[in-house]
Picture (cartoon, protein in one colour):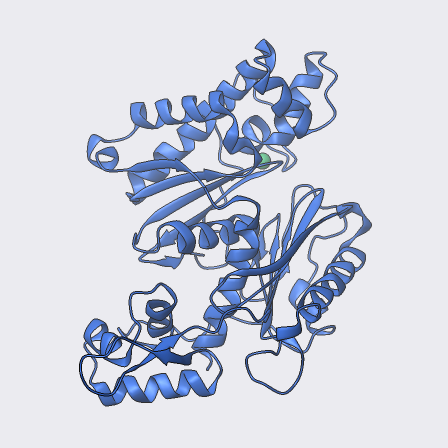
Amino acid sequence: MTIDDAPREALRGGPRELLRWVATGAAVSRADLSRLSGLSPSTVSQRVEALISQGLLEETGAGRSRGGRRPRQLAVPTGGAVVGAIDLGAHHARVGALDLSGRVVQARTLPVRIEDGPEAVLGALLTEVATLVHGDPAASSDGSTTGALRGVGIGIPGPVQHATGRIVSPSRMPGWNGFDVAAFCAGRVDVPVIVDNDANLMALGAHRTAHPELDHAVYIKAGTGIGSGVISSGRLHRGAQGSAGDISHCRVVADPAPPCTCGNAGCLEAVASGAALVTALRGQGVPVSDLTGVIRLIDDGDRQATALARQAGRAVGEILAVVVNFFNPQVVAIGGRLADCEPLLASMRATLYERCLPLATQTLLIERVAAGQDVGITGAAHLVIDHVVATA
Ligand SMILES: [Zn+2]
């Protein structure tokens, strides 16, 4: 089943927003929801009943009494592993089972050989998702609406056409170009499968976890590849086809301009990605085999590796400055394995302040993505949860 972004929910107090208020603790009762949404108590009640019958909300114990009958409290069911999530990377995949509040119930990291091709890789990961979900007793298929698998969210380290779930011209995924991930997975699981690129999932996961109150945010994912995800007016902004935020082939100042996998030269990815740092260090005669080795050299203060990290940070800062001037976000956060490289982060930050309008940086938060290795699967789960709520 191929999923589009579900019915747009622009109206205040739609099911998705009601659920989010309860999930974040902003509301614990129908009265709270009525106050926050401005909707009448009867409309709120109607929507809450619909969410309860879908298993998306539940009524728990009793709230604080104000003299009369103690009011029941609303909550998002937690504990049941009902959403499957896969965050595919170049060498590893993080696979998880999450509950309807977006909390990780079980997760594990598996080694992946992307060159084995989509059928082998995705087939194995879907099997792992099934194991994780069924390994949780609360998720048994006993007929209860809260225990059954609701959907699977998948993040791919390459461009994904959003409407179809198809991969289009990925850089380092031989055999994956044009592959219809959504259709392949739909043949193996009988729940909705939602596919997006990994940077978008990181953006969604980080936004929902750290800054759900901020409406405009940009998240950079700097690992083996480099990309970004954009939150605009509180929602993931994908653009017309799903390529919004893909900064990997924006050109930066570099002399000489290193060749890129896309056929051009001087792309951000060819200068500042983890893969580019490995290539550049090898070119200087440093025997480094992978990104882990590069990060170790930078941490040890190696002169060549540190210089390259600074150059990478400047390149990211240059592109980000254009984005910040154009888009005026409240927060810019960097995640991925290179986010912990101090020299990269410092020169990115310096370039950003140097190149941005004072008005754009006056209150701008520049930070690391704090959510750790589960941020991608958390974003994947939220894609599924949003879809489930929007179609409830
Ligand atoms: Zn390129």
